Length: 324
Image (cartoon, rainbow, N blue to C red; front, top):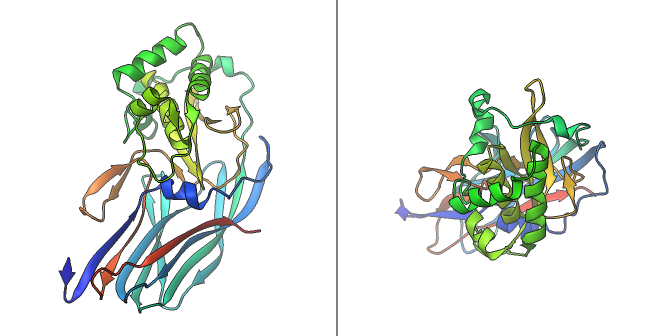
């Protein structure tokens, strides 16, 4: 679309698929449950004007934020002249760095890279898991009950999902055992597959094909839990996704428990200290193409602006890497 002699452009980077390729070598350092790990990570973007100049560029990328088990602070900023930054929060599920570049001339580069110090506590598993129970949906806070229904590509209300969840858990009496049965089944019956560059599969397709990447395997686990009345959600770290489920103790106090669905076995705990980028899988954000609010499973990175030359596209290189 042309406005005042400039072309309006939109670059749309869809969440975890490019992240898998970009961050695949960002393997987590050695850690174990109960530890508190302090790391520094560089997160941001480098935008290059290829094929012509641009103006009014606005880029966004997800950055670490505070959680009960994670504390974050910015210790350094690497910003090109004229570049400004701000932050955008999404329903307590994610935080994005917003980068604004008023003018970028042909072949110039604009940097916005922040260094975050991330203190991540890795929880121990519960001492008496057999005493935990399913929450009463009528007593749940809306922030928790939101993780009982379907999400984009997580079809928790599909009959096949409900039927399988009932079959897997029928002989188990405790909530912990029921969730564990779902966890074990997904790990045993769904083969992990590298799906980089392919469209993200939904829960039912993953179930039928019995293959999926970490995102799709975790999505199936989440859907099966929700169909039983167990709040569950996806957690995104650089290059990977794991799951969380919510149970309550005898006094009705609830807690989220992490689990590693697609990598080394970890149930009720986690040994991956990479910074948390997103919790949840049903985020309301503005689609820059339609300019309408849309629900997303993974919060996408975007770049919008205006190009001086027809067909020109800026190059945005996302950065999310540990400081060595």
